Image 1 (cartoon, one colour):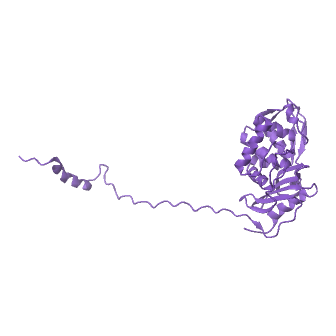
Image 2: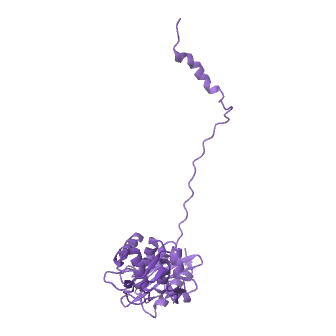
Image 3: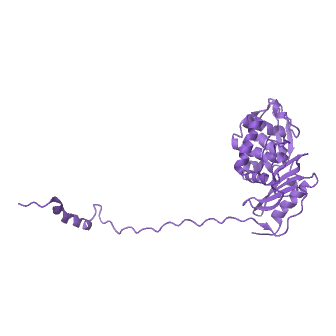
Length: 300
Protein backbone atom coordinates (compact mmCIF):
# COMPACT_ATOMS: atom_id res chain seq x y z
CA UNK A 1 0.00 0.00 0.00
CA UNK A 2 1.25 3.41 -0.96
CA UNK A 3 1.33 5.86 2.05
CA UNK A 4 0.81 9.55 1.31
CA UNK A 5 3.15 11.98 2.98
CA UNK A 6 1.78 13.25 6.30
CA UNK A 7 1.63 16.86 5.08
CA UNK A 8 -0.45 15.86 2.09
CA UNK A 9 -2.99 14.12 4.38
CA UNK A 10 -3.31 17.24 6.58
CA UNK A 11 -3.58 19.77 3.79
CA UNK A 12 -7.41 19.52 3.35
CA UNK A 13 -7.90 20.12 7.08
CA UNK A 14 -5.64 23.15 7.06
CA UNK A 15 -7.65 24.67 4.22
CA UNK A 16 -10.87 24.38 6.28
CA UNK A 17 -9.50 26.11 9.42
CA UNK A 18 -10.39 29.71 8.38
CA UNK A 19 -14.04 28.57 8.05
CA UNK A 20 -14.28 27.07 11.57
CA UNK A 21 -15.65 29.18 14.42
CA UNK A 22 -13.33 30.04 17.29
CA UNK A 23 -13.70 28.23 20.59
CA UNK A 24 -15.30 31.34 22.03
CA UNK A 25 -18.03 31.50 19.43
CA UNK A 26 -18.51 33.98 16.64
CA UNK A 27 -15.63 36.42 16.77
CA UNK A 28 -17.81 39.14 15.27
CA UNK A 29 -16.64 41.80 12.88
CA UNK A 30 -12.96 42.46 12.66
CA UNK A 31 -11.76 45.62 14.41
CA UNK A 32 -11.29 48.53 12.09
CA UNK A 33 -7.92 50.21 12.14
CA UNK A 34 -8.02 53.37 14.27
CA UNK A 35 -6.84 56.64 12.78
CA UNK A 36 -3.57 57.95 14.16
CA UNK A 37 -4.02 60.22 17.18
CA UNK A 38 -3.27 63.79 16.24
CA UNK A 39 -1.02 65.78 18.55
CA UNK A 40 -2.72 68.82 20.05
CA UNK A 41 -1.85 72.08 18.35
CA UNK A 42 1.04 73.89 19.99
CA UNK A 43 0.06 76.50 22.54
CA UNK A 44 0.41 80.03 21.32
CA UNK A 45 3.42 81.75 22.80
CA UNK A 46 2.25 84.97 24.48
CA UNK A 47 3.74 88.15 23.13
CA UNK A 48 4.87 91.03 25.27
CA UNK A 49 2.67 94.09 25.27
CA UNK A 50 4.68 96.97 23.79
CA UNK A 51 3.65 100.45 25.00
CA UNK A 52 2.67 102.72 22.14
CA UNK A 53 4.30 105.77 23.68
CA UNK A 54 8.05 106.32 24.03
CA UNK A 55 9.65 105.39 27.35
CA UNK A 56 10.27 108.17 29.87
CA UNK A 57 13.67 109.71 30.38
CA UNK A 58 15.53 108.48 33.46
CA UNK A 59 18.52 109.64 35.46
CA UNK A 60 19.85 106.12 36.03
CA UNK A 61 22.96 105.36 34.00
CA UNK A 62 21.79 101.78 33.34
CA UNK A 63 18.20 100.58 33.13
CA UNK A 64 16.05 97.85 31.64
CA UNK A 65 12.37 96.93 31.52
CA UNK A 66 11.45 93.30 30.87
CA UNK A 67 8.09 91.65 30.30
CA UNK A 68 7.87 88.98 33.00
CA UNK A 69 5.93 86.36 31.02
CA UNK A 70 7.96 86.38 27.82
CA UNK A 71 11.26 87.84 28.96
CA UNK A 72 11.09 90.35 26.12
CA UNK A 73 13.02 93.56 26.68
CA UNK A 74 10.70 96.57 26.41
CA UNK A 75 13.36 99.20 27.12
CA UNK A 76 17.10 99.20 27.72
CA UNK A 77 19.74 101.79 28.46
CA UNK A 78 23.35 100.67 28.93
CA UNK A 79 21.85 97.36 30.03
CA UNK A 80 25.05 95.38 29.35
CA UNK A 81 27.50 97.75 30.99
CA UNK A 82 29.16 95.96 33.95
CA UNK A 83 29.01 97.93 37.19
CA UNK A 84 28.54 97.46 40.96
CA UNK A 85 24.91 96.67 41.81
CA UNK A 86 24.98 96.85 45.63
CA UNK A 87 22.27 94.94 47.49
CA UNK A 88 20.22 94.18 44.39
CA UNK A 89 22.52 91.14 44.11
CA UNK A 90 20.85 89.81 47.26
CA UNK A 91 18.25 88.50 44.81
CA UNK A 92 20.91 85.99 43.71
CA UNK A 93 21.72 85.35 47.38
CA UNK A 94 18.06 84.54 48.01
CA UNK A 95 17.87 82.20 45.01
CA UNK A 96 21.00 80.39 46.19
CA UNK A 97 19.56 79.95 49.68
CA UNK A 98 16.33 78.59 48.19
CA UNK A 99 18.31 76.07 46.17
CA UNK A 100 19.80 74.75 49.41
CA UNK A 101 16.30 74.21 50.84
CA UNK A 102 15.60 73.35 54.49
CA UNK A 103 14.19 76.81 55.24
CA UNK A 104 13.12 75.74 58.71
CA UNK A 105 16.65 74.68 59.64
CA UNK A 106 18.10 76.55 62.63
CA UNK A 107 20.97 78.97 62.04
CA UNK A 108 23.20 79.76 65.04
CA UNK A 109 24.70 83.23 64.70
CA UNK A 110 28.49 83.55 64.92
CA UNK A 111 30.61 86.62 65.66
CA UNK A 112 31.99 86.64 62.09
CA UNK A 113 28.49 87.27 60.71
CA UNK A 114 28.75 90.88 61.90
CA UNK A 115 32.04 91.52 60.05
CA UNK A 116 30.45 93.92 57.59
CA UNK A 117 29.28 97.50 57.31
CA UNK A 118 25.71 98.65 57.97
CA UNK A 119 22.91 98.02 57.19
CA UNK A 120 22.73 95.46 60.03
CA UNK A 121 20.03 93.93 62.17
CA UNK A 122 22.41 93.60 65.09
CA UNK A 123 22.44 89.81 65.32
CA UNK A 124 24.44 88.50 68.28
CA UNK A 125 26.61 85.37 68.58
CA UNK A 126 24.67 82.39 69.88
CA UNK A 127 21.27 83.66 68.76
CA UNK A 128 19.18 81.14 66.85
CA UNK A 129 16.90 81.76 63.87
CA UNK A 130 15.54 79.77 60.97
CA UNK A 131 16.73 80.27 57.43
CA UNK A 132 13.19 81.38 56.62
CA UNK A 133 13.26 84.17 59.23
CA UNK A 134 16.62 85.41 58.02
CA UNK A 135 15.71 85.22 54.33
CA UNK A 136 12.59 87.31 54.90
CA UNK A 137 14.52 89.85 56.98
CA UNK A 138 17.14 90.11 54.23
CA UNK A 139 14.58 90.77 51.50
CA UNK A 140 12.64 93.30 53.60
CA UNK A 141 15.39 95.23 55.41
CA UNK A 142 18.54 94.16 53.52
CA UNK A 143 20.65 93.39 56.57
CA UNK A 144 24.23 92.60 55.61
CA UNK A 145 24.85 90.58 58.76
CA UNK A 146 21.78 88.53 57.87
CA UNK A 147 23.19 87.85 54.40
CA UNK A 148 26.52 86.74 55.88
CA UNK A 149 24.79 84.43 58.37
CA UNK A 150 22.82 82.76 55.59
CA UNK A 151 25.90 82.49 53.38
CA UNK A 152 27.97 80.85 56.12
CA UNK A 153 25.19 78.45 57.02
CA UNK A 154 24.55 77.38 53.43
CA UNK A 155 28.06 77.54 52.00
CA UNK A 156 30.24 76.87 55.01
CA UNK A 157 32.33 79.94 54.20
CA UNK A 158 31.61 83.28 52.56
CA UNK A 159 33.92 82.34 49.68
CA UNK A 160 32.24 79.05 48.99
CA UNK A 161 28.81 80.67 49.06
CA UNK A 162 30.02 83.25 46.53
CA UNK A 163 31.07 80.33 44.32
CA UNK A 164 27.54 78.95 44.65
CA UNK A 165 26.15 82.34 43.65
CA UNK A 166 28.34 82.39 40.56
CA UNK A 167 27.27 78.86 39.66
CA UNK A 168 23.63 79.91 40.03
CA UNK A 169 24.22 83.00 37.90
CA UNK A 170 25.77 80.94 35.09
CA UNK A 171 22.87 78.49 35.15
CA UNK A 172 20.42 81.39 34.85
CA UNK A 173 22.28 82.82 31.86
CA UNK A 174 23.78 85.84 33.64
CA UNK A 175 26.73 86.20 31.29
CA UNK A 176 28.41 89.30 32.69
CA UNK A 177 28.16 88.82 36.44
CA UNK A 178 30.68 87.83 39.06
CA UNK A 179 29.95 87.88 42.79
CA UNK A 180 32.43 87.89 45.65
CA UNK A 181 30.09 88.25 48.65
CA UNK A 182 26.41 87.72 49.54
CA UNK A 183 25.51 91.31 50.41
CA UNK A 184 26.78 93.56 47.63
CA UNK A 185 29.31 95.69 49.50
CA UNK A 186 32.06 96.84 47.12
CA UNK A 187 34.66 94.37 45.92
CA UNK A 188 36.93 94.94 42.90
CA UNK A 189 36.02 91.51 41.51
CA UNK A 190 32.28 92.02 41.84
CA UNK A 191 30.22 93.37 38.94
CA UNK A 192 26.93 92.75 37.20
CA UNK A 193 24.63 94.44 34.68
CA UNK A 194 21.05 95.66 34.49
CA UNK A 195 20.23 92.82 32.10
CA UNK A 196 21.71 90.17 34.37
CA UNK A 197 19.96 91.50 37.46
CA UNK A 198 16.68 91.46 35.49
CA UNK A 199 17.31 87.78 34.66
CA UNK A 200 17.76 87.02 38.36
CA UNK A 201 14.68 89.07 39.29
CA UNK A 202 12.54 87.29 36.70
CA UNK A 203 13.51 83.93 38.18
CA UNK A 204 12.95 85.17 41.74
CA UNK A 205 9.51 86.45 40.72
CA UNK A 206 8.57 82.85 39.91
CA UNK A 207 9.19 81.87 43.52
CA UNK A 208 6.11 82.32 45.74
CA UNK A 209 8.42 82.56 48.77
CA UNK A 210 10.68 85.33 47.47
CA UNK A 211 7.73 87.09 45.89
CA UNK A 212 5.84 87.15 49.20
CA UNK A 213 8.90 88.30 51.16
CA UNK A 214 9.72 91.07 48.67
CA UNK A 215 6.13 92.38 48.82
CA UNK A 216 6.10 92.53 52.64
CA UNK A 217 5.82 96.15 53.77
CA UNK A 218 6.42 95.52 57.47
CA UNK A 219 7.90 92.52 59.20
CA UNK A 220 7.82 92.13 63.02
CA UNK A 221 11.19 90.43 63.41
CA UNK A 222 11.57 88.65 66.74
CA UNK A 223 15.06 88.33 68.17
CA UNK A 224 16.12 85.29 70.17
CA UNK A 225 15.82 87.40 73.32
CA UNK A 226 12.12 87.86 72.66
CA UNK A 227 12.47 91.50 71.63
CA UNK A 228 10.53 92.40 68.49
CA UNK A 229 11.65 94.98 65.95
CA UNK A 230 9.38 96.23 63.21
CA UNK A 231 11.27 96.06 59.95
CA UNK A 232 10.00 98.43 57.25
CA UNK A 233 10.67 97.49 53.64
CA UNK A 234 13.39 99.62 52.09
CA UNK A 235 11.44 99.68 48.80
CA UNK A 236 9.36 102.89 48.87
CA UNK A 237 7.63 101.95 45.62
CA UNK A 238 5.48 99.51 47.58
CA UNK A 239 3.78 102.61 49.02
CA UNK A 240 3.86 104.78 45.91
CA UNK A 241 2.52 102.32 43.31
CA UNK A 242 -0.54 100.24 44.30
CA UNK A 243 0.36 97.26 42.13
CA UNK A 244 4.09 97.22 42.91
CA UNK A 245 4.99 93.95 44.66
CA UNK A 246 8.78 94.01 45.02
CA UNK A 247 11.66 93.56 44.76
CA UNK A 248 15.03 94.92 46.06
CA UNK A 249 16.91 98.12 46.79
CA UNK A 250 20.65 98.73 46.86
CA UNK A 251 23.06 101.58 47.48
CA UNK A 252 26.80 102.11 47.89
CA UNK A 253 29.06 104.97 46.87
CA UNK A 254 30.33 102.86 43.96
CA UNK A 255 26.94 101.69 42.71
CA UNK A 256 24.84 104.79 43.34
CA UNK A 257 21.19 104.24 44.11
CA UNK A 258 19.83 101.02 42.59
CA UNK A 259 16.37 99.50 42.55
CA UNK A 260 14.64 96.44 41.14
CA UNK A 261 10.89 97.03 40.95
CA UNK A 262 8.24 94.51 39.96
CA UNK A 263 4.51 94.81 39.43
CA UNK A 264 1.44 93.20 37.90
CA UNK A 265 -1.59 95.00 36.44
CA UNK A 266 -4.46 93.81 34.24
CA UNK A 267 -2.82 90.50 33.43
CA UNK A 268 0.56 91.99 32.59
CA UNK A 269 3.72 91.89 34.72
CA UNK A 270 6.97 93.78 34.34
CA UNK A 271 10.42 93.91 35.91
CA UNK A 272 12.29 97.21 36.10
CA UNK A 273 15.97 97.57 36.97
CA UNK A 274 17.63 100.96 37.47
CA UNK A 275 21.31 101.20 38.39
CA UNK A 276 23.52 104.17 39.25
CA UNK A 277 20.70 106.60 39.88
CA UNK A 278 20.57 109.28 42.60
CA UNK A 279 18.86 109.43 45.96
CA UNK A 280 16.28 111.84 44.61
CA UNK A 281 15.72 110.24 41.20
CA UNK A 282 15.82 106.49 41.88
CA UNK A 283 12.18 106.26 42.97
CA UNK A 284 10.92 108.40 40.08
CA UNK A 285 13.06 106.46 37.60
CA UNK A 286 11.62 103.12 38.66
CA UNK A 287 8.05 104.34 39.08
CA UNK A 288 7.81 106.03 35.69
CA UNK A 289 9.27 102.99 33.93
CA UNK A 290 6.95 100.59 35.77
CA UNK A 291 3.88 102.75 35.01
CA UNK A 292 4.99 103.13 31.39
CA UNK A 293 5.28 99.37 30.99
CA UNK A 294 1.94 98.47 32.63
CA UNK A 295 -0.37 101.47 32.34
CA UNK A 296 0.37 102.74 28.82
CA UNK A 297 -1.84 101.68 25.91
CA UNK A 298 -0.03 98.82 24.25
CA UNK A 299 0.03 96.70 21.10
CA UNK A 300 0.58 92.96 21.44
